[in-house]
Amino acid sequence: MTKLIITIFLIAIINSVAEFFLPWWILAIVCFAICYVAKLTTKQSFFAGFLGISMSWLILILLKDISNHHILSTRLANLFSFGGNYFLFILVNVLIGGFVGGLSGLCGKAFQFANNSKEFN
Image 1 (cartoon, rainbow, N blue to C red):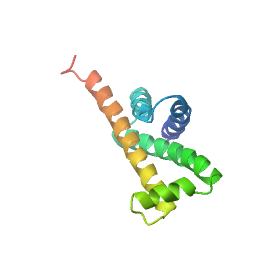
Image 2: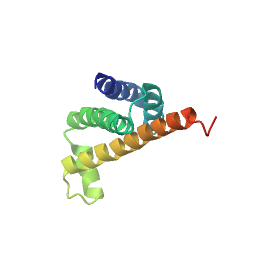
Image 3: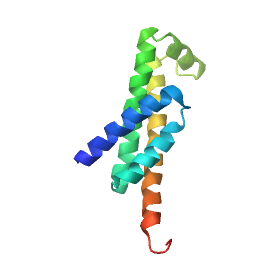
């Protein structure tokens, strides 16, 4: 259990730092690499990627969104037909990032399994 919590926070911290300097899709590489090294179970790998990226994106979005009084997120919510509901727009963004992170963590676990399998050696 502690390995899972450490992995979640490690993904969130490394992703938050990496996204300041690199493109958004670096999250997939971060989740893949950390879940490959962490040697978690399949479910734990998915949830570590999902929760780590969700936390990271939620914090980064709120830091930028609260400082400009939700102006940009409200306009984007109108653009994407959320009826100006910036909370729903933020929730959808966090879920999309979480699923990308979760699937990347799952791929890291699958790659670890493939490297340790007898058929691939």
